[in-house]
Length: 213
Image 1: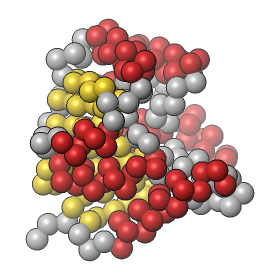
Image 2: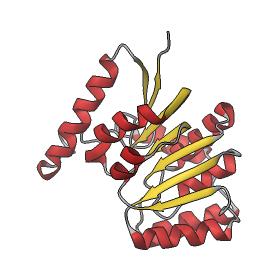
Image 3: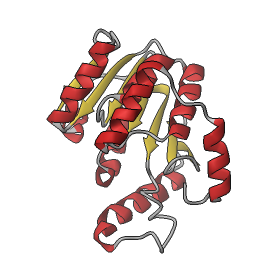
């Protein structure tokens, strides 16, 4: 992450053990094919957090090849619904789920995440958002509606390659996405209805839950 000194980042990465077995093969495949998947630190945090939360139902926006869904399936006994726009990546994800005998627990939807959540009538204990960054505001609004009481929303890559935090990393062609992410962050932190925490791991992980009462 871009607010952490490189030597600290390297030290933490050395502490976090690599996954073995099928997940290790999946990460290698993603690296070879240049498919973005969750950072190892984010993976470690997600596994830890979900083992504490113990969700029964999970929604994921942005499946890619199914790595993060596989991590969540390993950490929980939850039923997982995951949505992926790219049909080719969805084919890979389905194969990976089948190879891990996860077909009965993981429901893969091929389509636009924003369109899906508008129509979805489900309810979830945990929602992991890692799809189109320019749509995070839209996703959040609908996901709050789908979130169970005491449920948690986790949004990955909210610092968008460090562009929100560093002028040196900013790319003008990404200005619309950066503006939308900044607006969303300001809104959630100023909200009286939400409890929010931004974690300096990976590319920024935003944790959100509703305040009750």
